[in-house]
Image 1 (cartoon, rainbow, N blue to C red):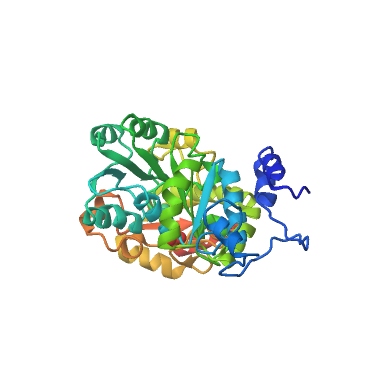
Image 2 (tube, rainbow, N blue to C red):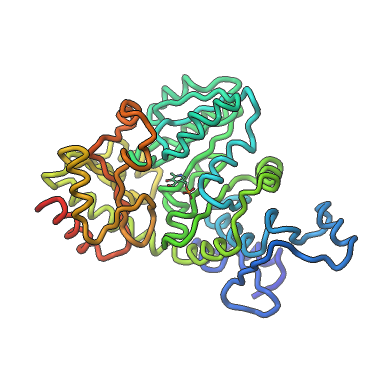
Length: 401
Ligand SMILES: Cc1ncc(COP(=O)(O)O)c(C=O)c1O
């Protein structure tokens, strides 16, 4: 393996995704370790005062302080950027830190933001509560309706934000069409790509300017740590995001970065298996008498199935479905499960299930949940890596058949 960084980076760009995930971004120390080293250090020392000055001025390469950058974190950032096909990546302590930084690093008071309303509860809180409090003008729309996007964009719109598939309603938004409208008014499109993962949906290729992840989900995928990432052009990262993150400090810890690097090595095999399992379970649930409705982008019955299949290479690993009998029936069903755990995380090796109306979206008023299609009988299943027959048996016994 070449030790010259520039040469190595050129080589990495020729690699196919699986090789990028296993080997991308490696910075081997002088010890020649096979496994990436964990640099658990807050600071770095300099050979001289002049060296410190040169690094601070950016005249010389090298780490300064782990809030600004760290070798293990840099390996994770580089590996994820290679996988996404992005010019640059910055890791954050959580997915929410990534979402917040991707917006706050670029907005100025008075700017207009358009966002799809079908969002994870905390993302919705940022756009509907926090941004207006700081003087940003926000328009929330039904993101599946391109006419609503068209009507919402205006000359002072600087940013559009969406999730596709959305949490938990699994709505699909046409990224290419929205990106085109955003660019027509000189706004940037930010996409939360958590449900699709970098493997199923190449969001930047569809014209998105910035893509954000909760690395807590499939990237770790083993329930071990929190993390996030923002990927974009070198220009956006250097000019907007880097100063914002450096000075506000939601940095990823080297330990978590190391776990996430290990997560990327197996991401493809895990996501592939989860998607196969999820499709099987969605089909099973769709034919079950106690289930009123199944939402899964990979099923033909999904309202945006054709768009989903154009934009994504598989339906994903999350299936949302509604149980006949509302909240009490949904709670009874959850409490009867023996393998699937009741937990609001997702993308994990273990199948997890949650009742969005009383957990991730409990903050919303019933009428707001109704607009998002989050009924009292809805549950969101994150399909894991267990034998799918065991998960199906567990669902079956809990549904009472
Ligand atoms: C779509 C989406 N975006 C962002 C987040 C936030 O991620 P984190 O929990 O890592 O802050 C989540 C978490 O559930 C999510 O589902």
